[in-house]
Image 1: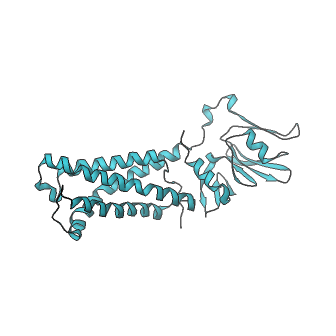
Image 2: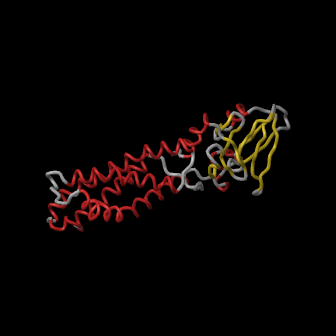
Image 3: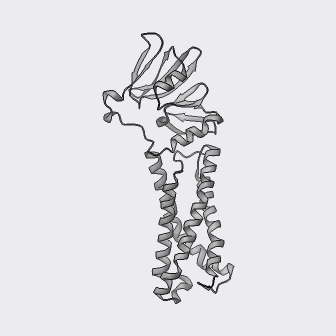
Amino acid sequence: MSILPLPPSTNYRHHFLIAILLGAWLYLFLAIIGPFDAVELSLKIRIQLMIGYGFVTVFSYLVCIPVQNGLYRQLGYWNGLLEITIILLFSIICLPTSYRYYITDWVNGDYGFPRFVLEIYIPTLIILLPLLVLSRRFAARKSVASSAPIPPTILTKSDWIQLSGTNKLDILRLRPDQLIALSAANNYVTVYYLEEGSLRKKLLRSTLTKMQEEVPLLLRVHRSHLINPHHFLEWKGTSTAVLTQLEIPVTQAYKKDLLDRLQFRP
């Protein structure tokens, strides 16, 4: 199964906005256009009644987000099949709630359930799906963009990182965007970094704990490994993080911390 490099946004604020957008768009479409059997109702009546479908849409979408976030945290990756699963879940939750509102005394719909599904629900869902897909894609891009590497051009001298070992000559000075990962090697730490686009490494006599205290941006993903989350590209399987020119194992105990950091919002 292929792993997409674009994970879903797990930010509830993003999805609340998506839910409001979907609900408002559906309400306006049903109220102003008056499709299907609503065409027989006056504009004033449609404005009063169709708002219920907007609330149903908002509720149905928001119910799906904890499921999405739980799947992503548990599996550690996201792909097209999982995205389709969430969209289908939204469609399934929305169907009975929409029909239940349709047959209330307020709307007093005449169609039975099969006819409602074929002539009202499916056509409406087809109209709604493009906005759902595009808005989720936009939220995912915004989520990934917020975790983009720091451009070297905006760094000042105070932004540079200096890694030091116990020996006086054990010094390595880097920009934050150069630092990829650190790995424990007996009494030493192997520092992986970029220099002119190529992967380099340097041994420093130190410990991962000391290095993590000196460089807060580093995140522990394994007893023997720290990574710079800005260099995370994708998952290989469920327990290996693919970084820039490097692969690092991730244990289950630290996996949640990595997923949280990847979705962090300022």
